[in-house]
Amino acid sequence: MAQTITLPDVADTEAFGIRLAATLSAGDVVILDGPLGAGKTALTRGIAAGLGVQGRVSSPTFIIARVHRAGAPDRPGLVHVDAYRLTDSAVPLDEELDALDLDTDLADSVVVVEWGEGVAERLVSRYLMVRLRRQPDSDVREVSWEWCEAAR
Image (cartoon, rainbow, N blue to C red; front, top):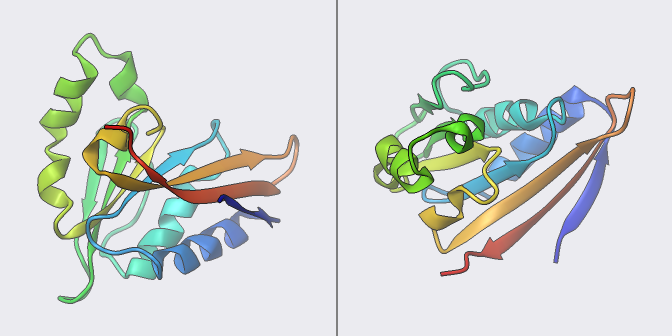
């Protein structure tokens, strides 16, 4: 069953990401759904902070995926993917995903996929779906999340 909270501003969105990271392990896939400006990258910054990964987190829009190494030997890394451009390609989606080689990163990383619904579910049998919605003319966001089983 989905859980929902209200996040008054960007700092709260990042803080929620830190709390969410405490529940994640290497091999987990997090799919972020929401329109432009909903807070997907802010949430990913929080997840990255909670995991303690290396490097600055920014939107991977033009490079598709950024890899952030683990900050400690016993912690997972983070792979931050923007799937928006994958669905706008002449190359079949399965080939695009295969080219990213995310399967190899799953063993030691948490994979967060912005714009990932309908794209990233095929990577694992279970994933965390996070839906973000921003109220008009406001920084207030509604966030719902739940673990889902992938249809196989």
